[in-house]
Image 1 (cartoon, rainbow, N blue to C red):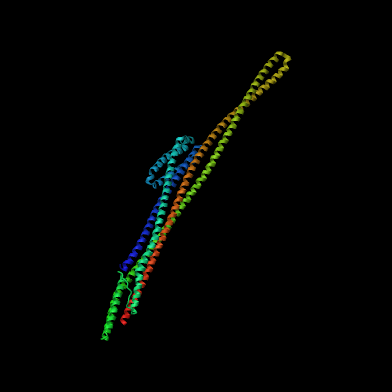
Image 2: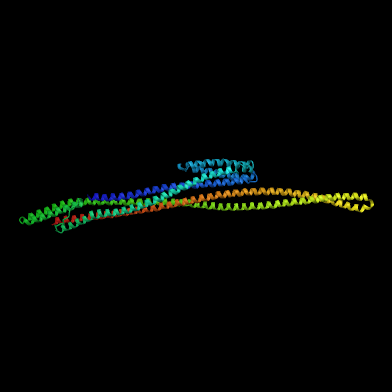
Length: 556
């Protein structure tokens, strides 16, 4: 095999190693990029679905504001906010529909159907509360059937969120497995490629090129010094072997010429001229054959040097591309971390809302208990007023009987004549007092009747207040449950986005490994370049030795 073929084989082997490492790196980058894109899309879908659930809770809360409003004017502000949340919910669902994959399309269609029913009913509730009366809106929406439909709608949204979270989890697991396998493969390829380059460099550069050239140079120096006995070396099949064979032929010819010169003592001048001519011709032939071989060797060294430079440039480009992809992966990681921070902020907001709703629920419960106690006190007051009415009625009866007795006494005094006049005066005074007592008891009875009527109205009003506060308490409990579900969903989304950020960090580490492999390939190319330079230097030295040797032969 010629030196050119050996160098070409070494260059092709190094190039193949570089291509394999680059191919695995590019394939890994493509797989990681696809996984990160799919993970971001799944996390965004889950976050959008959670926001839809939050908007549904807001609509329900505003609906209950319409139920509890004093009149249609008071209900208008709740209805406006309800319509705004419905519009935002439907816009978010429309945007989400453009990103839902086919595997989740059936579940999303159920969410869309539930959203249409939910929107239609809530629009009708808003219209009834602002155009008819808040009580009409409450009759329309505050019932078990509506609550069951709304719960089914939110359950379908939760299922969509759970599907997105499961997809993110599956992508994270697949990405971790791909990272482990590709990292091991890249390390093995980089180490194996570097080791193979070193072994090939030693086998081809040193043992088959540099060492044989050193032996040829030493043999030429021996010939130039007149030592015609060359070591017995089996020539190879490359250019160096051809040079060595030519040198052996030359040495043998030189020995034959010396023998011929010793046996031909006569005609010394002619023999000397003939030997000089033979040496000159032999030197010319040697220089021609060896010079051509040295030229081929120099050309092969130049080709090897050029190929090594190309390999070094390719390794540098691979390094730059790996660095660019690593920067892109780092930017992606920053974006995913920003999404994670936003999700954590959303979770904190949901926690704060949950605490406020819990406080509202506790306050409503206290208000319910206070209204019950007040109702009990007012009912006791009504009972006391009723008992006072009974006492006043008794006094009125006594006054009537007293008046009747005074009348009888007056009649008896009239029958007694002059003797009963004083008794008649007393009877008249008693009758007057009885009449005044009856009048006073009538006034007291009227006032007590008014007190009893006001007490009954107060009891009824307090009962209605207690009912309203009880409704508010139930609403607060429902909102607290919805907010708790929202907190759980938001925390799951935050965990999924954190997993996606960790996967992006793994991509960055893998790209660092790819970049390190490219650097090692570049180092191997640099070593090949140094070997090519050394080969060129040895070829130049060999050419100088041949020129010096031929000059010595011609001058002899």
